[in-house]
Length: 255
Image (cartoon, rainbow, N blue to C red; front, side):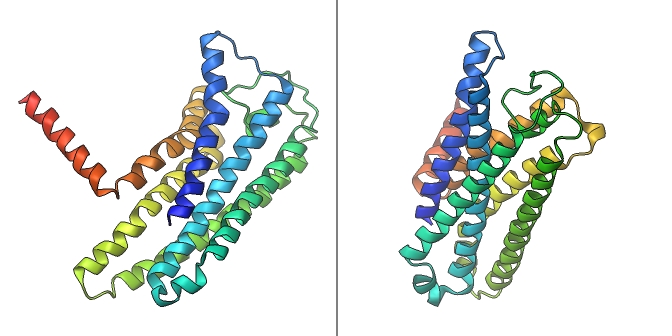
């Protein structure tokens, strides 16, 4: 579990580092400029890291499934070699997906200027600037990606159906609590990641506006990577005790 969390932390850190520094610099200098190569690099890294994170969360669902539903076989099925291969597959999937989308997006002719109506380079916003006949290939790639995303989502849901079925069969209440404490942080991270991403890309066109697109982009690109460490750290007993003391101290001062 900690090996996968190590990879997840690097993906989260990379996602924020891809977007936030350039946005902060533009805000400080009161500009919205970004070079063509910088925009391409930002698109590639953003798609690469988000795609890798989604694949890694799917792998972590498999890890939770084996740990709870097949505990006696866990050390055999999820040995160090298998974990490395699964993590490498997640990173490689994100890299391949990003390479295809970036190469295809930046081969499209732009007929409507070069102003991206977003605080970072985002593929849907770039497609809005393309010629009407030249974005069909990228639209096809997006459909394929959505199918893969939906497949991973179905796999994760099926894994948790099996997990909760097994947990409710555990006779002891302590055993159920330990199983839930293992799964709920991951389930919360997946729910936050999927819900914000689905709303960003599958919301009805009638709901689209520059301000709303900006808020949704912040929700799916910055909130999950920033909140993930907090969600997983809540399993740490020392951190929970420190947080509880801090809340009690604040409440005591207010009284």
